[in-house]
Image 1 (cartoon, helix red, strand yellow):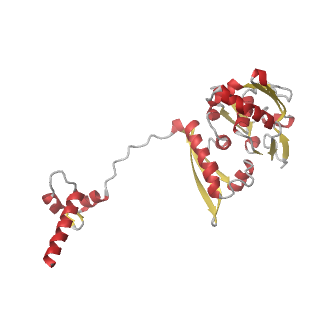
Image 2: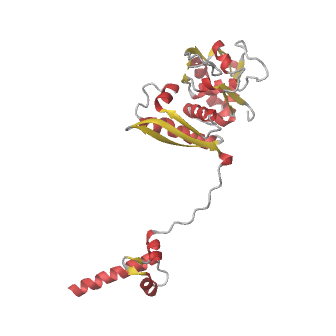
Image 3: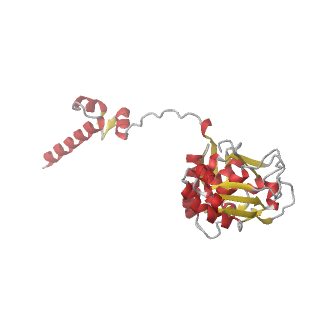
Length: 290
C-alpha cells in the first residue's frame, strides 16, 4: 500500500459529496487500483477485502468487518455533484451522478466488489494536467472523512503552499447542509480536527487562519508544506523574567541594581532581593510613622 497512488481529476476533488470514513476508504482503495497504462471502463470490477481495510487503517479485521457491510450498502446510494468536465474544459455544466453502478458485499469472502459509474470513469482515468495525486498511505490512518477531503484540497495546490477557501463553498463541497451552522462550530468540529489529523498522519503540515468580510468570517486561509522541507527551527533563547529584565535595565521596585547587588543574600535572585528590600523599606517607613 505504501506505493499505491490516488489520482483524481481536480473537478472531482472539488465536487460536492458526502462519504463516511469507511465509504471513503473503500472508494480510495479502489481508485488506487486504477492502472495508469490501461483505459478504464465502467465494466472493470474492483475488490477490497476486510483485511486490506484493516491493514490500511491500522485496526483489527473484526472492527473493519463491522463497518464495511454498512458502508457497502450505503455506498450505492451516494451521489456526487460535479461542476465541470473532468479536465477543466469550458462549458459550465453541473452533473449529478453516482460513484458506483454496482456494489457487492461478499460476506463469506470478507470482501467488497464495485464498479464505478459510467459518468465517473473520465474523472479517474485519461487525466491530463488538471488532476491531483497523492499516496493512499497519506490518508490511511485518518479517522475523519473531513480530514481526507481537506487533505485532497491542499494536495491540489501542493506547489503553491497556500489555499484560500470560501466558507460557503466548503460547506457545499462537504455537503454539511444545516450541520455546524455557526463558524465557531465549523471550526471546532470540522476544521480543527481535520488540520490536526493532517499534521499527525500525512506528509504535510498545515496551519490555518480566517478572513472576514465586514464582521462575518467568509474565507479560510490554509498555509501548508512538506514536513521534511520545513526549515530547522533556531533554538530559542530562554526568556528572561520581567524582573530580571528590569534588573538588567537598572532597577526593580525602584531600588537601583547596585543596591540590590550589595544587599542581596547568598542565593537570592534580583527579584527576590529587591522584593525583600522593598518590603523592609515599607515596614521601616510604617514603624517610623507610628
